[in-house]
Amino acid sequence: MLHTKKSKNEINNIVNQILLEYSGYRVFKYPYQITSDSSEYRAVYSQDYERYSKLMNFLPNIEPKSRVLEVGTGIGYLAVMLKRIFNYDVTTIEHPSRESLKNRDFLNRIAKEGIQIKAVNILSDMDIDKNIYDMVVFSEVLEHISPTPDMIKKVFDNLTGIVKQNGYIVVTTPNVGTLESRLRALRGVSIQPFPLQDMTDDTYEHVRIYSAGEIKRILEIYHFEIIKIGYSNYIKGKLVSDLKRIILSKIAPVMSANIMISARKTK
Image 1 (cartoon, rainbow, N blue to C red):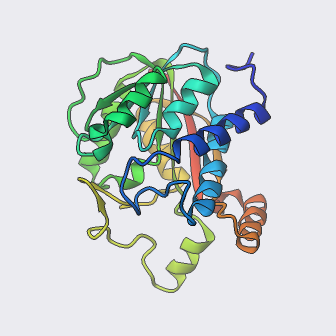
Image 2: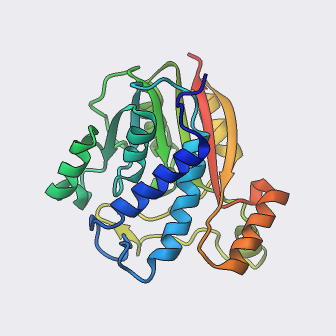
Image 3: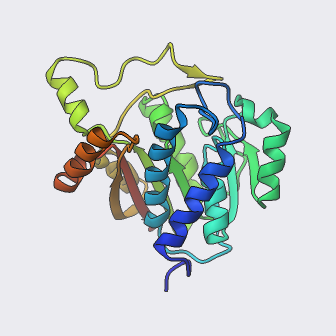
């Protein structure tokens, strides 16, 4: 039995509704958030709809009211989707430096959804009990973290420790194996430029891009069994380039723009 009675179309419709609703609220300054009244929003919407609709249909089957932690609140899309679509008991955590945590209208909106929001730095000791969450969703955050062994170990020590035995972690992140990345490497151009100039509050923009194999290996070290690996693309509302991405992803999914990995804790 699936974790929801909603069909794929129903899920996608709710994703669409939440994107249009929450994109109308200003949480971060431009260009870190493109609101729906901007001429740039069409491309942002297409990209977000592709990623979130794929993710919502990718998640493992767990019961309504299950305790779910989302890492990296952003403007609230993912936490609200988890709540409205699946009726999970959702907590979302955000880096303490983020300006959204000072935005009273935003905090009230999240609270009205029945979602808890907390300021937590996953790079330090987290004040969260061990083994309490049925699922942790770690989406589009890993690529922002300094990729030193100590940092990566601290993050996964923290996140895997709060997942119940037989609970799940879902990781999504940009894919290093895209055609664009491969072509840049052939030209001798860095796949990921050094990001010192690109900071949001006290957090970096993309620092390190991963392959599915690397994330799989990290999770296996922490005694997680990989359930499935999926991919999504950046669809930007431009016919020719979008068709190229869609066709290529059908032929070679490993060249898609984003990776999704679902894994279950075995110890």
